Length: 130
Image (cartoon, rainbow, N blue to C red):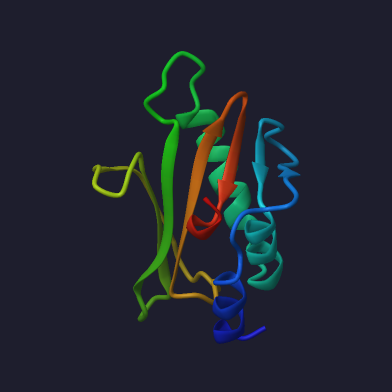
């Protein structure tokens, strides 16, 4: 799929009829929109990186501080094809996590995903699915 086709399809996701459990982090599930993104943009690596990093760094059982997380992947340098993944506990909060990928083949210029606590489960979703 082209970038434009993926963006058009992503805009149509509101809510989710199914949840898909992450293979390595059983307490993290993803929505229909995130599953579509991973398949269409061939970025299962991004879903894995968010889930595993969040699970082992930002989901402590004894605090509510990280109950809402904003994960963003965006191009930061076209010359060396570098993209940056960041995490904030809200859009107006400081960046708590940052990782640069060199020579990344992610097709979109930017994507934002939310990781939200829902009882004992964490849901990775598109902002339009909230």
